[in-house]
Length: 394
Image (cartoon, rainbow, N blue to C red; front, side):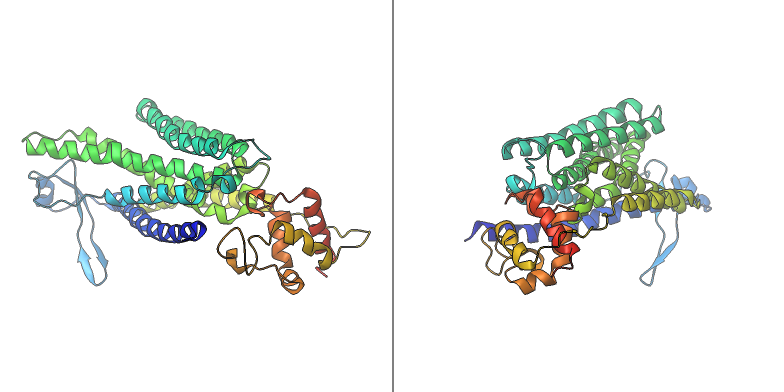
């Protein structure tokens, strides 16, 4: 069976599964942060006597719910206890395999950009994998050293680290691979928080209870800190995951700065919701986040086309360029991949004219195509397409 077809099938199934388990993890994360921020001290003396520190009444799906949170742990360990861990592990594993199928198995096309660095596919993969590991190690060290001393300093240093990694990756890898690996680095850190801190802390608490000892509250406090971090990191990860569909972000000459500003906006917006759950309406945070996003999108807007004074080329002059650089993928019978992406076919002059604005956007304004410039489209050819567009796609 054709290898490229197998890649497409694997991509489809892994994307679908990754999306499903990711929704489960993000949903539970958002819910529990909302729940913690919404709990009220119990008024029933019996609940206080049991060690309940907060409770909430809610209605959903026609039923009433009364979740309760203990200050440390209940007096007796229940016979059945649900663990929230497989959502995280499944999301990490499916995401890592998806990264392998889409990027590592096709590193020459998706990761290597000869215009930035003369890397072999193996070297590009090594940089990507090292990013995941180093990202977790640096974050964990910062947490251990600074978290209980100065939360603001920790957040600032971690943000500077992420931006520095983004700058480095955009100098070495293709833009889309750089953005995706920043998201994968943060997502790996989130899952490592669950694996190395949150779940082990819960296991230690349970083990102490089983031995008849009073649980040490430090384990719950540490797990809670890491869980809150995961909550703030969710929106930045989600942006990085979808950014590969929007080349105007990762193909900018200062793509690292574009990413930094968007990630900062995402954190500010998430902070608003976390405060809102506590009853604090701090409108300035989403306002600042929205202003950042608006400023970035205005900054990235393509300049208007200038029509050549010498006359614009015709579609007959443009078609040989597209045949040489684009038709290997965008054809009814492509040679590089199983099917034309997004159904874009450029076999005839009529098809080329109809898709003129999209051709302009992808090859000139965004320079997203050809993917990885695998067919070596030149700057002069891009200028020719721009002149054709300026003349009205005739």
